[in-house]
Image (cartoon, rainbow, N blue to C red; front, side, top):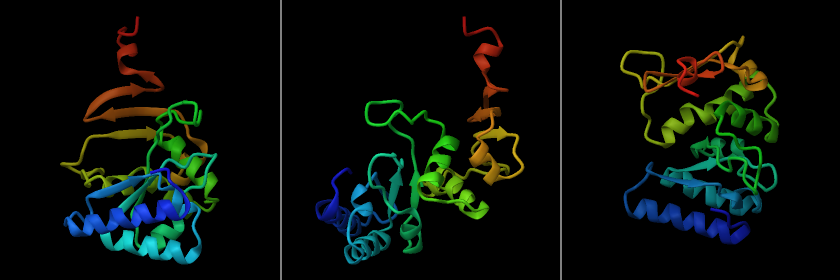
Length: 192
């Protein structure tokens, strides 16, 4: 949703009201919601409190050229916020590459998230918070978890967000996708 200011805020409140009326709390997400980064504090609080009550999640891609939803303020008021990566090197923003670790770093920089805890919060926006908003597919390091994994050499999550090291291993649904920076098909001679 790209509409800004009062128009966008009214649309967000309408979405929240419809989610409640339809019994769809926790099953609605709005992408972008730029209005949340442009409205006055009183209208912001009214809109966000309704979004929280309706359990409407907000997805941000945090583009560099427009107002974005204020992540901390939304989370403090009980709204689930997660991150996605659109605009894969398109005319609106050339900074999208589909890499969620890069997106976490962009969000951290844009929202001035500098401490280790804040960098871990930025990482959560692209991992567990996204899972919550999208139905919690039970990711994690335990039996029965979805077998999606990216391994990097980093001393901490905060270091991984800041340094964005090469991916040592990438698994998707338990299958090897890439290892040491090379696609699995390329490692077996399948890339021509």
